Length: 386
Ligand SMILES: [Zn+2]
Ligand SMILES: [Zn+2]
Image 1 (cartoon, rainbow, N blue to C red):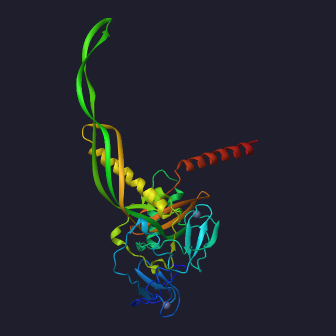
Image 2 (cartoon, rainbow, N blue to C red; image 1 turned 45 degrees about the vertical axis):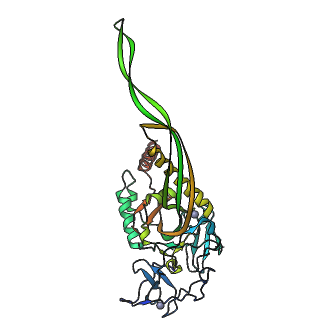
Image 3 (cartoon, rainbow, N blue to C red; image 1 turned 30 degrees about the vertical axis):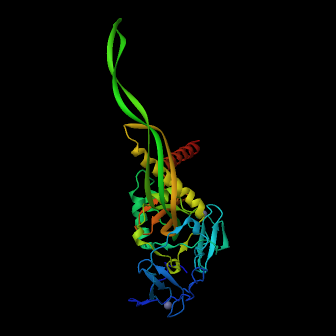
């Protein structure tokens, strides 16, 4: 079903609690039993409604609150991936994009069979991987389509040096999608060695020829006194984020800014109802390789600050990682595409703050086009005058 066309038919819907049935078997979630996502009143499919912060029935409009377990989101040691929950816990199929490699969920009623990230129609229908690790937590999608369109318009109008057509451009497609990200915690014991440098000044004499005469002069020269130094430090790194998506442009996603980890709730399949979710494409160990690299860079900066003196060289850092923990979370975004000048452009909208990050052509394209039009007109005029 399309969550945007599900207009409520009741003006003041009653919020009920716990209407969505969940299997009561204790390990139902760990084996990926699908959650029933149909309306208690009429049996029609329900979907997550950002504006209501509840599930809304597409047929009768009644709302059902999503019950969230009051437990802390579990962070697991790296060694304990094998007994973590698997699958989305939802009967879904995946579109696998042949261009950008994203694997995105869709439900039976989704009409658009193109990739929500790159717009490619080259998508394959696949079974969701029941073996994929389940996200432990997510931030519920809060921004609805109206705000996405308004913020997109404001963003397009606010850009400088762009074609005028951009000010009138319309949203082509807008898809709310949960993007997977790994978050790593780690304790690091770093030992470093370096050459620590202290500045000192000396007076040097030199000769210069002025008007053909040799003169003796002096100048102050900065020198560095080097001595070896060493040290160690212990740091805790918390929630180092690594996007596990292949569909999302990492730079653009980075521009969207942070997500408030306060808003994290334990994963529940109901939040995904009617929306897309990408299955992670960068697995836990590859994700940890990227996360560890981020931590190494930070650790090097921290150690560099510890080196005494005015400057340093030959800094060598040896990091010992311990207590590495991970969680897999889903972060809400809107993937928006628009067409301009026969080309498709991608824009992302933060699913919590509504911030827009995206690509747009510069106005030299317009200038180029104007040059072509003028040249074309000149050619036409020349042809007519012959
Ligand atoms: Zn209903
Ligand atoms: Zn794609």
